Length: 90
Image (cartoon, rainbow, N blue to C red; front, side, top):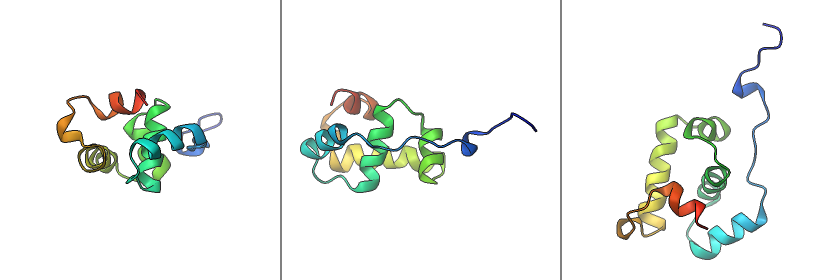
């Protein structure tokens, strides 16, 4: 179809902001490169679906990654805020 583009046809954003990366790693040094990508894209307001496409993951895998990051690397068991709330406050 002419003029019809799916999300996968478009160039999706990367985590280019050194400020965001630095604030995430300063606060949570155990974050991996993949974790940082999820954090940056989340902070930019992208949905799990878009993040999943960007990172070549299943949507439910992205959700699981966020949960794991919060629980294991952000002391999330002590914090009742959502992953997105934590990220957006950094």
